[in-house]
Image 1: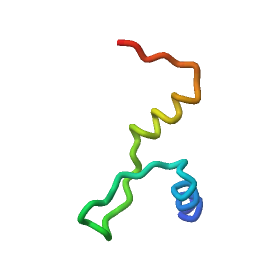
Image 2 (image 1 turned 30 degrees about the vertical axis):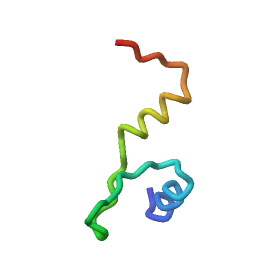
Image 3 (image 1 turned 135 degrees about the vertical axis):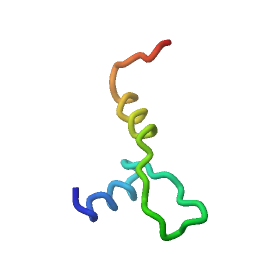
Image 4 (image 1 turned 90 degrees about the horizontal axis):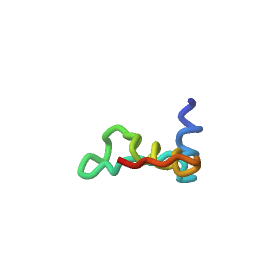
Length: 49
């Protein structure tokens, strides 16, 4: 995926990122848990323990 595509997905809210906190120049980390929940919410899946 190109950097511009990733930036567009982040700005559209389609690619959730973790807050950087005190490290303003740190790497951007994709929140994989939130991404998984977003993907599962669009499906007919039930997660019961």
